[in-house]
Length: 316
Ligand SMILES: NC(=O)c1ccc[n+]([C@@H]2O[C@H](COP(=O)([O-])OP(=O)(O)OC[C@H]3O[C@@H](n4cnc5c(N)ncnc54)[C@H](OP(=O)(O)O)[C@@H]3O)[C@@H](O)[C@H]2O)c1
Image 1 (tube, rainbow, N blue to C red):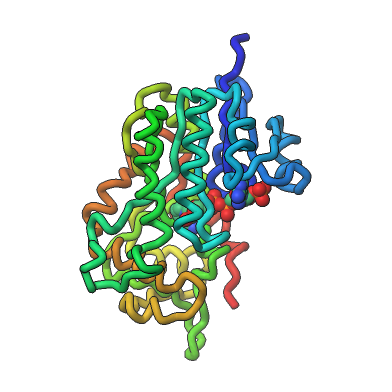
Image 2 (tube, helix red, strand yellow):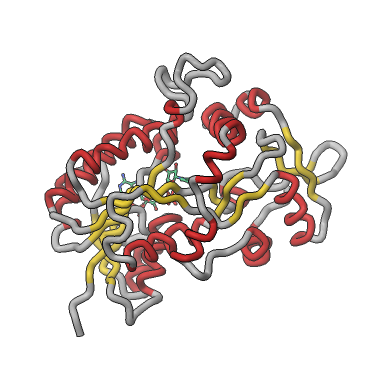
Protein backbone atom coordinates (compact mmCIF):
# COMPACT_ATOMS: atom_id res chain seq x y z
CA UNK A 1 0.00 0.00 0.00
CA UNK A 2 1.32 3.45 -0.90
CA UNK A 3 2.23 5.64 2.06
CA UNK A 4 -0.57 7.97 3.09
CA UNK A 5 -0.28 11.71 2.61
CA UNK A 6 -0.38 13.43 5.98
CA UNK A 7 -2.64 16.46 6.43
CA UNK A 8 -1.70 18.56 9.46
CA UNK A 9 -4.98 19.95 10.75
CA UNK A 10 -4.91 23.15 12.77
CA UNK A 11 -7.99 23.60 14.95
CA UNK A 12 -8.71 19.85 14.76
CA UNK A 13 -10.41 19.76 18.17
CA UNK A 14 -12.74 22.51 16.95
CA UNK A 15 -15.47 22.92 14.37
CA UNK A 16 -13.75 23.33 10.98
CA UNK A 17 -10.61 21.29 11.61
CA UNK A 18 -12.65 18.65 13.46
CA UNK A 19 -14.84 18.15 10.39
CA UNK A 20 -11.75 17.66 8.25
CA UNK A 21 -10.02 15.32 10.71
CA UNK A 22 -13.14 13.15 11.01
CA UNK A 23 -13.63 13.14 7.21
CA UNK A 24 -10.08 11.80 6.77
CA UNK A 25 -10.39 9.30 9.63
CA UNK A 26 -13.78 8.03 8.43
CA UNK A 27 -12.26 7.14 5.06
CA UNK A 28 -9.66 4.54 6.08
CA UNK A 29 -9.08 3.39 2.50
CA UNK A 30 -8.43 6.97 1.33
CA UNK A 31 -5.02 8.41 0.44
CA UNK A 32 -4.74 10.70 3.47
CA UNK A 33 -3.85 10.48 7.17
CA UNK A 34 -4.82 13.08 9.79
CA UNK A 35 -2.24 14.75 11.99
CA UNK A 36 -4.25 16.56 14.64
CA UNK A 37 -2.74 19.78 15.98
CA UNK A 38 -3.82 20.82 19.45
CA UNK A 39 -2.31 22.86 22.25
CA UNK A 40 -3.05 19.98 24.63
CA UNK A 41 -3.09 16.34 23.46
CA UNK A 42 -4.58 15.29 26.81
CA UNK A 43 -8.04 16.79 26.39
CA UNK A 44 -11.06 14.54 25.81
CA UNK A 45 -11.49 15.96 22.28
CA UNK A 46 -7.87 15.25 21.34
CA UNK A 47 -8.05 11.76 22.83
CA UNK A 48 -11.28 11.02 20.94
CA UNK A 49 -9.51 11.84 17.65
CA UNK A 50 -6.54 9.67 18.68
CA UNK A 51 -8.97 6.78 19.29
CA UNK A 52 -10.29 7.25 15.74
CA UNK A 53 -6.72 6.75 14.49
CA UNK A 54 -5.31 10.27 14.31
CA UNK A 55 -1.73 11.16 15.11
CA UNK A 56 -2.04 13.87 17.77
CA UNK A 57 0.71 16.48 18.14
CA UNK A 58 1.11 19.62 20.24
CA UNK A 59 1.59 23.04 18.67
CA UNK A 60 0.34 26.58 19.05
CA UNK A 61 -0.29 28.96 16.15
CA UNK A 62 1.40 31.65 18.22
CA UNK A 63 4.61 29.60 18.23
CA UNK A 64 6.12 29.27 14.76
CA UNK A 65 8.70 26.68 15.80
CA UNK A 66 6.01 24.36 17.12
CA UNK A 67 4.22 24.71 13.79
CA UNK A 68 7.39 24.03 11.82
CA UNK A 69 7.87 20.86 13.85
CA UNK A 70 4.32 19.62 13.38
CA UNK A 71 4.13 20.48 9.65
CA UNK A 72 7.39 18.61 8.98
CA UNK A 73 6.91 15.53 6.78
CA UNK A 74 3.30 16.38 6.03
CA UNK A 75 1.86 16.64 2.52
CA UNK A 76 -0.59 19.40 3.37
CA UNK A 77 -2.16 21.50 6.09
CA UNK A 78 -5.50 23.04 6.97
CA UNK A 79 -4.90 26.51 8.38
CA UNK A 80 -7.47 28.45 10.40
CA UNK A 81 -7.33 31.24 12.99
CA UNK A 82 -9.39 31.73 16.14
CA UNK A 83 -10.80 35.25 16.26
CA UNK A 84 -13.43 34.60 18.91
CA UNK A 85 -10.79 33.32 21.37
CA UNK A 86 -8.99 36.68 21.49
CA UNK A 87 -11.02 39.23 19.46
CA UNK A 88 -7.77 40.46 17.86
CA UNK A 89 -7.35 40.89 14.09
CA UNK A 90 -3.64 41.48 14.66
CA UNK A 91 -3.32 38.09 16.35
CA UNK A 92 -5.08 36.50 13.38
CA UNK A 93 -2.56 38.12 11.03
CA UNK A 94 0.26 36.86 13.23
CA UNK A 95 -1.18 33.33 13.27
CA UNK A 96 -1.55 33.35 9.48
CA UNK A 97 2.04 34.58 9.12
CA UNK A 98 3.27 31.78 11.38
CA UNK A 99 1.30 29.09 9.57
CA UNK A 100 2.31 30.29 6.09
CA UNK A 101 5.96 30.48 7.18
CA UNK A 102 5.86 26.99 8.66
CA UNK A 103 4.15 25.64 5.51
CA UNK A 104 6.91 27.16 3.39
CA UNK A 105 9.59 25.80 5.74
CA UNK A 106 8.12 22.27 5.57
CA UNK A 107 7.67 22.56 1.76
CA UNK A 108 4.05 21.52 2.00
CA UNK A 109 2.46 20.60 -1.29
CA UNK A 110 -1.06 21.85 -0.52
CA UNK A 111 -2.40 24.24 2.11
CA UNK A 112 -6.02 25.21 2.58
CA UNK A 113 -6.32 28.65 4.15
CA UNK A 114 -9.72 29.16 5.77
CA UNK A 115 -10.58 32.78 5.15
CA UNK A 116 -13.29 35.38 4.70
CA UNK A 117 -13.49 38.62 2.71
CA UNK A 118 -11.52 41.75 3.54
CA UNK A 119 -14.74 43.78 3.50
CA UNK A 120 -12.78 47.03 3.14
CA UNK A 121 -12.49 46.19 -0.56
CA UNK A 122 -16.26 46.76 -0.78
CA UNK A 123 -16.73 49.21 2.11
CA UNK A 124 -13.67 51.45 2.45
CA UNK A 125 -13.06 53.00 5.86
CA UNK A 126 -14.39 56.31 4.46
CA UNK A 127 -17.80 54.68 3.77
CA UNK A 128 -20.01 55.67 6.68
CA UNK A 129 -22.77 53.15 6.06
CA UNK A 130 -21.20 51.22 8.96
CA UNK A 131 -18.83 52.34 11.71
CA UNK A 132 -15.08 51.71 11.51
CA UNK A 133 -14.10 49.33 14.35
CA UNK A 134 -10.81 48.86 16.19
CA UNK A 135 -9.35 51.84 14.30
CA UNK A 136 -8.95 50.29 10.85
CA UNK A 137 -11.50 47.58 10.22
CA UNK A 138 -15.11 47.37 9.11
CA UNK A 139 -15.65 43.70 10.01
CA UNK A 140 -12.60 42.87 12.12
CA UNK A 141 -13.06 39.07 12.11
CA UNK A 142 -13.40 39.09 8.31
CA UNK A 143 -10.94 41.79 7.32
CA UNK A 144 -7.81 40.37 8.92
CA UNK A 145 -8.47 36.94 7.39
CA UNK A 146 -8.88 38.47 3.93
CA UNK A 147 -5.84 40.67 4.49
CA UNK A 148 -3.84 37.54 5.33
CA UNK A 149 -4.59 35.79 1.98
CA UNK A 150 -1.57 37.39 0.35
CA UNK A 151 0.76 36.13 3.10
CA UNK A 152 0.34 32.59 1.75
CA UNK A 153 0.54 33.57 -1.92
CA UNK A 154 3.50 35.97 -1.43
CA UNK A 155 5.49 33.05 0.00
CA UNK A 156 4.42 30.94 -3.00
CA UNK A 157 2.90 28.35 -0.67
CA UNK A 158 0.65 26.14 -2.87
CA UNK A 159 -2.63 27.33 -1.40
CA UNK A 160 -6.36 26.99 -1.90
CA UNK A 161 -8.07 30.03 -0.44
CA UNK A 162 -11.33 28.78 1.07
CA UNK A 163 -14.18 31.21 1.74
CA UNK A 164 -16.35 29.68 4.46
CA UNK A 165 -19.92 30.55 5.48
CA UNK A 166 -22.00 31.28 8.59
CA UNK A 167 -22.25 28.11 10.68
CA UNK A 168 -25.83 27.05 11.39
CA UNK A 169 -24.22 25.73 14.61
CA UNK A 170 -24.29 29.39 15.76
CA UNK A 171 -27.97 28.74 16.49
CA UNK A 172 -26.74 26.27 19.15
CA UNK A 173 -23.43 27.62 20.45
CA UNK A 174 -23.31 31.33 19.65
CA UNK A 175 -26.53 32.49 21.28
CA UNK A 176 -28.28 33.09 17.94
CA UNK A 177 -31.06 30.52 18.31
CA UNK A 178 -34.79 31.24 18.62
CA UNK A 179 -35.63 33.36 21.68
CA UNK A 180 -38.96 33.99 23.40
CA UNK A 181 -40.22 37.57 23.19
CA UNK A 182 -42.40 39.30 25.81
CA UNK A 183 -45.43 37.90 23.93
CA UNK A 184 -44.05 34.37 24.41
CA UNK A 185 -43.45 33.98 20.67
CA UNK A 186 -40.18 32.49 19.43
CA UNK A 187 -38.13 34.50 16.97
CA UNK A 188 -34.71 34.59 15.34
CA UNK A 189 -33.18 38.05 15.08
CA UNK A 190 -30.95 38.99 12.16
CA UNK A 191 -30.24 42.30 10.39
CA UNK A 192 -30.49 40.78 6.90
CA UNK A 193 -33.77 42.35 5.68
CA UNK A 194 -35.11 40.06 2.96
CA UNK A 195 -31.64 39.05 1.74
CA UNK A 196 -30.19 35.55 1.69
CA UNK A 197 -27.59 34.37 4.17
CA UNK A 198 -25.24 31.63 2.96
CA UNK A 199 -25.03 29.07 5.78
CA UNK A 200 -23.47 25.68 6.33
CA UNK A 201 -23.22 22.90 8.93
CA UNK A 202 -19.79 23.53 10.47
CA UNK A 203 -18.94 19.84 10.03
CA UNK A 204 -19.46 20.22 6.26
CA UNK A 205 -16.69 22.83 5.97
CA UNK A 206 -14.12 20.18 6.89
CA UNK A 207 -15.78 17.64 4.60
CA UNK A 208 -15.55 20.10 1.71
CA UNK A 209 -11.90 20.75 2.60
CA UNK A 210 -11.31 17.00 2.39
CA UNK A 211 -12.89 17.09 -1.08
CA UNK A 212 -10.45 19.84 -2.07
CA UNK A 213 -7.43 17.80 -0.90
CA UNK A 214 -8.76 14.76 -2.77
CA UNK A 215 -8.84 16.77 -6.02
CA UNK A 216 -5.05 17.05 -5.94
CA UNK A 217 -3.72 20.22 -7.53
CA UNK A 218 -7.00 21.29 -9.17
CA UNK A 219 -7.73 24.11 -6.71
CA UNK A 220 -4.20 25.18 -5.82
CA UNK A 221 -3.81 28.87 -6.60
CA UNK A 222 -7.59 29.33 -6.61
CA UNK A 223 -10.11 31.01 -4.33
CA UNK A 224 -13.20 28.87 -3.77
CA UNK A 225 -16.31 29.41 -1.65
CA UNK A 226 -18.74 26.98 -0.05
CA UNK A 227 -22.18 26.99 1.59
CA UNK A 228 -24.91 24.46 2.30
CA UNK A 229 -27.80 26.77 1.37
CA UNK A 230 -28.54 30.45 0.82
CA UNK A 231 -31.62 31.26 2.92
CA UNK A 232 -33.54 34.37 3.97
CA UNK A 233 -34.42 34.95 7.62
CA UNK A 234 -38.04 34.06 6.80
CA UNK A 235 -36.99 30.79 5.18
CA UNK A 236 -34.85 29.87 8.20
CA UNK A 237 -37.70 30.77 10.59
CA UNK A 238 -40.09 28.58 8.57
CA UNK A 239 -37.61 25.69 8.73
CA UNK A 240 -37.30 26.17 12.51
CA UNK A 241 -41.10 26.15 12.85
CA UNK A 242 -41.37 22.90 10.90
CA UNK A 243 -38.50 21.20 12.77
CA UNK A 244 -39.51 22.33 16.27
CA UNK A 245 -43.26 22.02 15.78
CA UNK A 246 -43.63 25.54 17.24
CA UNK A 247 -44.00 28.80 15.40
CA UNK A 248 -40.72 30.72 14.99
CA UNK A 249 -40.84 34.12 13.29
CA UNK A 250 -38.08 36.16 11.70
CA UNK A 251 -37.39 39.39 13.55
CA UNK A 252 -35.62 41.57 10.99
CA UNK A 253 -33.84 44.44 12.72
CA UNK A 254 -31.72 47.22 11.18
CA UNK A 255 -27.95 46.65 11.44
CA UNK A 256 -27.61 49.65 13.79
CA UNK A 257 -30.00 47.99 16.23
CA UNK A 258 -28.04 44.71 16.03
CA UNK A 259 -24.78 46.60 16.63
CA UNK A 260 -26.26 48.07 19.82
CA UNK A 261 -27.14 44.69 21.41
CA UNK A 262 -24.08 44.97 23.64
CA UNK A 263 -22.80 41.39 23.68
CA UNK A 264 -19.08 40.97 22.90
CA UNK A 265 -18.66 41.22 19.13
CA UNK A 266 -22.14 42.70 18.48
CA UNK A 267 -20.75 45.62 16.44
CA UNK A 268 -18.48 43.32 14.43
CA UNK A 269 -21.40 40.97 13.70
CA UNK A 270 -23.78 43.87 12.95
CA UNK A 271 -21.32 45.12 10.33
CA UNK A 272 -20.80 41.56 9.04
CA UNK A 273 -24.51 40.97 8.47
CA UNK A 274 -24.85 44.41 6.86
CA UNK A 275 -22.01 43.55 4.47
CA UNK A 276 -23.74 40.28 3.57
CA UNK A 277 -27.06 42.12 3.13
CA UNK A 278 -25.70 45.01 1.07
CA UNK A 279 -23.54 42.81 -1.17
CA UNK A 280 -25.87 39.80 -1.35
CA UNK A 281 -25.30 39.12 -5.03
CA UNK A 282 -21.51 39.04 -4.72
CA UNK A 283 -21.52 37.23 -1.35
CA UNK A 284 -23.90 34.43 -2.36
CA UNK A 285 -22.26 34.20 -5.78
CA UNK A 286 -18.88 33.56 -4.17
CA UNK A 287 -20.33 30.54 -2.30
CA UNK A 288 -21.59 28.13 -4.91
CA UNK A 289 -23.84 25.37 -3.59
CA UNK A 290 -23.34 22.93 -6.47
CA UNK A 291 -19.59 23.32 -6.14
CA UNK A 292 -19.73 22.59 -2.40
CA UNK A 293 -21.83 19.49 -3.12
CA UNK A 294 -19.36 18.33 -5.76
CA UNK A 295 -16.65 18.37 -3.06
CA UNK A 296 -18.87 16.85 -0.39
CA UNK A 297 -21.81 14.79 -1.67
CA UNK A 298 -23.23 14.49 1.87
CA UNK A 299 -23.55 18.32 2.18
CA UNK A 300 -26.47 19.01 4.52
CA UNK A 301 -29.39 21.31 3.83
CA UNK A 302 -30.63 23.51 6.69
CA UNK A 303 -33.62 21.21 7.13
CA UNK A 304 -31.37 18.13 7.42
CA UNK A 305 -29.06 19.93 9.84
CA UNK A 306 -32.06 20.98 11.96
CA UNK A 307 -33.47 17.45 12.11
CA UNK A 308 -30.10 16.22 13.39
CA UNK A 309 -29.46 19.06 15.85
CA UNK A 310 -32.81 20.43 17.01
CA UNK A 311 -32.57 18.78 20.42
CA UNK A 312 -29.40 20.81 21.10
CA UNK A 313 -31.10 24.15 20.47
CA UNK A 314 -32.08 25.73 23.75
CA UNK A 315 -35.39 27.60 23.55
CA UNK A 316 -35.04 29.46 26.86
N1 LIG B 1 -18.98 30.84 13.67
C1 LIG B 1 -19.12 31.02 12.37
O1 LIG B 1 -20.21 31.11 11.82
C2 LIG B 1 -17.89 31.12 11.51
C3 LIG B 1 -18.06 31.09 10.13
C4 LIG B 1 -16.92 31.19 9.32
C5 LIG B 1 -15.68 31.32 9.90
N2 LIG B 1 -15.55 31.34 11.26
C6 LIG B 1 -14.21 31.48 11.82
O2 LIG B 1 -13.79 30.24 12.30
C7 LIG B 1 -12.66 30.46 13.14
C8 LIG B 1 -12.61 29.45 14.24
O3 LIG B 1 -12.67 28.16 13.74
P1 LIG B 1 -13.52 27.04 14.47
O4 LIG B 1 -14.93 27.52 14.64
O5 LIG B 1 -13.28 25.78 13.75
O6 LIG B 1 -12.83 27.04 15.89
P2 LIG B 1 -13.28 26.40 17.28
O7 LIG B 1 -14.36 25.39 17.06
O8 LIG B 1 -13.53 27.53 18.20
O9 LIG B 1 -12.02 25.59 17.76
C9 LIG B 1 -10.80 25.80 17.37
C10 LIG B 1 -9.79 24.87 18.02
O10 LIG B 1 -8.56 25.56 17.79
C11 LIG B 1 -7.67 25.36 18.79
N3 LIG B 1 -6.91 26.56 19.09
C12 LIG B 1 -7.34 27.72 19.66
N4 LIG B 1 -6.30 28.55 19.81
C13 LIG B 1 -5.21 27.92 19.31
C14 LIG B 1 -3.85 28.27 19.18
N5 LIG B 1 -3.37 29.43 19.63
N6 LIG B 1 -3.01 27.38 18.60
C15 LIG B 1 -3.45 26.18 18.18
N7 LIG B 1 -4.73 25.79 18.28
C16 LIG B 1 -5.59 26.65 18.85
C17 LIG B 1 -8.44 24.84 19.97
O11 LIG B 1 -7.88 23.57 20.18
P3 LIG B 1 -7.05 23.13 21.48
O12 LIG B 1 -7.74 23.74 22.65
O13 LIG B 1 -7.15 21.65 21.40
O14 LIG B 1 -5.65 23.63 21.26
C18 LIG B 1 -9.90 24.71 19.49
O15 LIG B 1 -10.47 23.48 19.78
C19 LIG B 1 -12.79 31.90 13.65
O16 LIG B 1 -11.69 32.65 13.24
C20 LIG B 1 -14.09 32.39 13.02
O17 LIG B 1 -14.02 33.75 12.65
C21 LIG B 1 -16.63 31.22 12.08
